[in-house]
Image (cartoon, rainbow, N blue to C red; front, side):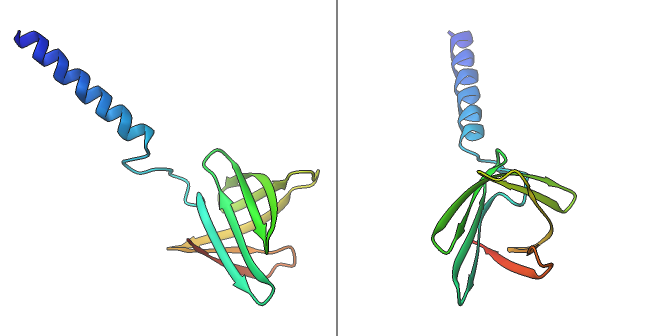
Length: 113
């Protein structure tokens, strides 16, 4: 009987650990880009969504632009769906602030939602 209780306890612990891992408990993504980042200007609201699997979406004032991305040493490469030439830029993250250089080299600041 003691062996059965020990096996049952081990099974419960294994299942609980599996559920924590599946639900993202214990840390989530190690990629600091993952999440939603918003910037609001007089032209509207702009939101980058970066997913952990290298996909994302850019909501440019109501226009959805899905993309894939890679992130390597502060250099972000985004390939928007339907385009052949990727957008490559530098970025920095400080706390809940993402700063991306736009195509003209200007800093654009996004805040984590």
